[in-house]
Length: 455
Image 1 (cartoon, rainbow, N blue to C red):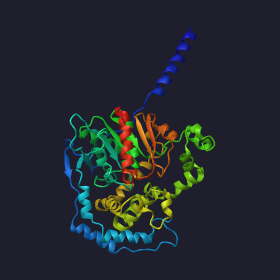
Image 2: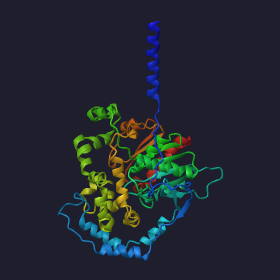
Image 3: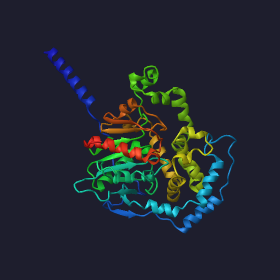
């Protein structure tokens, strides 16, 4: 009798262990209030209000006055962009900004697509919502949420939007696109309380999409958009039909990743490494440690004392431009550090770059955008979502000059249903803005696979 009971307990324990191990945990998150003071004792305002980007004479006069009063400081000889934004080239950018850049025209360009605001958890959330024009009869648009990062904005997606909502190929999927601004960024109101992290942003964006009437949708993200959309998939996996990413640094290195780093150079096929993987990973100390230290100084500042440096950037348009545009140089191709002009206009136009800067300047969001680092890193690197795998179908676009390279094996450790992994022909961190055609095509291919349509 004792033996039978013991055997039953053992079998029962094994079954319980296997069930618990296979159970897919879902990320939990409670509603928050990020407005000023305490939540009002009334029903939530769920109205959706059209929004128009505006400018005026006073705003431009203030900008020009500050630009005219900037104090230049010479760069070291033969330093290019290795010490940061080269001062001599900055003078060229500032001269163009002051005398040739037409902000009023760019405002018209921003208003090309419909903007809206709606209040969620006490703060106004801004978003661009583009519905396809002339949708063929019998065709249903596929909803797609696209989330930006820092120091980017919704404007990064402007050249991609028509490729997705008005594709030239009749066999392509027609998308209905929603591009929100992360709270504290661009024209979204900044949280008034501490603690607004990526999980909070994910919850707010789920509420936004539900308010817009979407029961299910696809999501795309890079930079902060990567972790926000990943958290959305962890919060409500049945609502996210597919997750498409172009940035996915390992949040919790496991044994497969450690072994691949130790042995991958000698046994690349064992870990699925290709020649580009080897080139980006090895030598390990130089590529994974030294390079990370070189390019992460901003992160340490923003994850600890964002308000201090932010105050200076909020006062100086030239300082703000240097701080933001330096990232569009180095994060596009780290070799651009060795060029006198930082290679800025090799991939982008000054008009597009300065439009992104002006979104930060006119909205006064640089401090609140930097706080997002503090809110995420101050809680430690061992948050529940960092240990939780994603079971939503995922597509990954691997751009060769991405700031942090992630081989397929490493992506699979987190994203258990990795359906597509595409080594891209070219492109860096701001891929949606740099290579909109390549990015749009990869989103098409991934979504077609999920929708079971022919590529």
